[in-house]
Amino acid sequence: MGAEQLTQVVLPGKVEPEGLLIRHGAVPVPGPGQVVIRMEATGVSFAEQQMRRGKYFDQPPFPFSPGYDLVGTVHATGPGVDPDLAGTRVAALVKVGGWASHVAVAAADVVPVPDGVDAAEAEALVTNGITAWRMLHHMARVKAGQTVLVHGANGGVGSVLVQFARLAGVKVIGTASPRHHAALRERGVTPVDYRSEDVPARVREIAPHGVDAVFDHVGGRGVLDSWRLLAPGGTLVSYGSASTRDVGGSKMWPVLKTVGRVMLWNALPNGRHACFFNVWAGARRKDSFRARLHADLTEVLDALRRGDIDAPIAARMPLARVAEAMRLAESGTVAGKVILTP
Image (tube, rainbow, N blue to C red; front, side):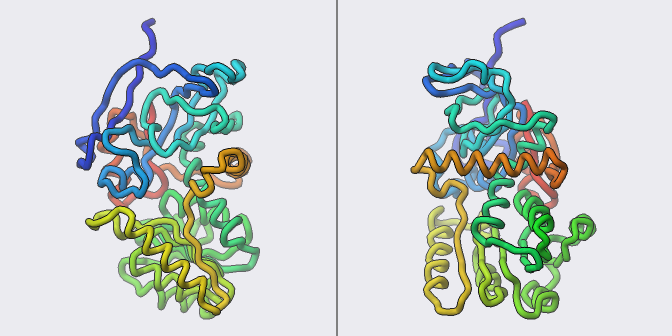
């Protein structure tokens, strides 16, 4: 049997999905404090959709290998790392580089995956699960009996968010296209068709006094409606700008515009609160960031292991079919996350 070989996807520039390249080379050697993970599952998130358009606000220069997170088995350990970590299944949040058969990661950044948990299901909950958990419990601080609005309730983050909200005893209103309404009702969500219905009017019918929190990944002008739908004391959590994905111009402008609105709204004496969520907030304080990441992802994966939540997976495809996977993820027709396997 021959030596293992590295296979990775490279994003050479602003290209259509078919312009993604497959490259082969030597498996990386872990440096001091590092491990090399043999990837078992990675995924297509909104971040990579922005990156291929050059629209992700802090992406590296082209060319680079995308891939926001991954789950796999520790293949090798570097100097200063416990060699017993080899063979352990772990998850890692990496921002770039995850679309590869082997990925070098700081050992301090990996989180153990519980025994018996499927790698693809764990992968679907790395970025999406941390995002949903933190927004719900750390930013909006929801309580049982409250009502929240989740935009894109069938999406990668939304589908996890509604599950954690229902577990917390929270009533959920979720926007989605009609094809997803039956599945949302099964989760106890009141669905709203964002394509044919007047969303603010419909939400007002369901929650006449407003909602206690809105989770908005859409951005653009629609975030104004999200703010107006808040009840007194409510919280708007903005965590993306999907509506500007295909719009030209500065990649920083949508983020800066949202942050500016958040600052303005929070200066108003109306008892409501707005915030902008970024999973990398506080990353410069490495020790505290890693501790929080480890704690939150452990909560999420333990909930999956217990069966309290499931991991919505839209499709599983091999890395070699990354263009097809990207097209599917960008189609707006799927529920859950598109997973890539070696």
